[in-house]
Image 1 (cartoon, helix red, strand yellow):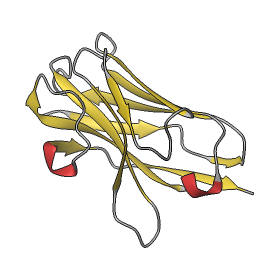
Image 2: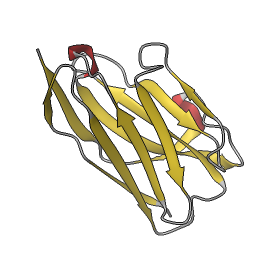
Image 3: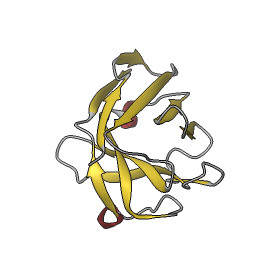
Image 4: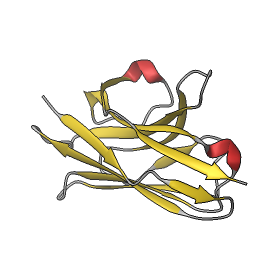
Amino acid sequence: QVQLVESGGELVQAGGSLRLSCAASGGSISRYGMGWFRQAPGKERAFVAGISWRGHTANYADSVRGRFTISKDNEKQMLYLQMNNLETIDTAIYYCAVERNAYGLGSRRRIDYGTWGQGTQVTVSS
């Protein structure tokens, strides 16, 4: 059973950058699409970015497209989210997740993900 641990979240000023990491252990992620989701206070967990199992195809929420970049390193068992030009609306707990089925493309739907990390807090101040 794959386990995921996120890191890299912290307090940053608006306009700044952060790089989130997600380390996988206990099983291989190389055949699985993965994604980043976020949950702001009082809101539902929402899709941020997804990436295909080989890491060749990515898709993004409209609110982050052009500012965030998702990447996957199958050899290192890592998932990343580079976040640039951060805004206060990006404040949330960020979660990485692995799709339930192999050879996925990084779905936008929460239901397609079966394994989640514990989350890392990102706070953007104005």
